[in-house]
Image (cartoon, rainbow, N blue to C red; front, top):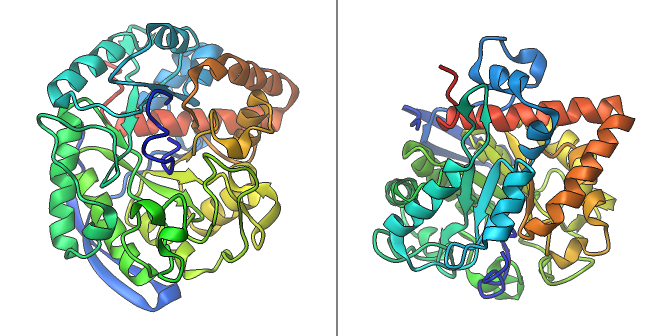
Length: 403
């Protein structure tokens, strides 16, 4: 979600385990080679033409109504400490396929699992089989840890995690992910792969201010981000690299500030190579920043930029997984754009999963997407590919059953 929000601002608004294999990851841009034992990469993503008709994801897709397909493109928030039945009912009405646990909860794993089980019980059924929900949260550590209480560890900040060996971090990450899984959470919107230069440090509002970075150089961040990723996948929880192409060099928080621009980062910056390292290590999800990058695409926010998503991420880096937005609901960075246009622009740029911490915007967003689909064959194709990516991720996570 607006995973870089101020920790207090989020409150109230907002199984299958892959066998481990050893994967050498080369961070060529910074001249660093790191060896991290990684989970075997999942491929939650090929377009429809690459799916055998016999795959569970394809069969699920084929049996879905048009509305059910569009609903797979959205993730809306639920506040675990105070779930809003009206918003939950609204998301069910619009067939929303993913939820984000937002705010803060100290209820622990058992209570969280009870809540999630209730949500999963209301998930859509297709051809007599339930299509499980992706259930996500921000469980980074430090000041950004949504879920706590009995059964959950108190996770230190990423800056502290970055001082550990990668072996230790992978092991701890596997424990934290196991706790998430026991609570019904199957997707973590972490790790933060942003590099905050030491010269900026806590003056970087979204990341540095809260010690959310693993370190101040790509050489430190890459192996630690990959270790966190590997531990999560080892325990059967999907993970998300964020916030592409990086929020470490900005001086504004896109959750609370309009017009945030990165004037430093280029498509070949070492900080961007960290994401390539994570993608090569098998990251199934990547979250896109809502800032503008003047040296990459000065005319569009990253979330609305084909250059960022289709050229850099898909083509140049070879990412085949799910591209999720940062918050397109309450974030000030996108307030000037009509809600429906936010969804259409993100999907048109190559995104797959629209995250909004304000579920009440989902009706307008889905209507806009459906309208655009009737007008553009190219957009329809993109949407169909996105639905397949989401469903394939769900299949990898054991959320689809086809009998």
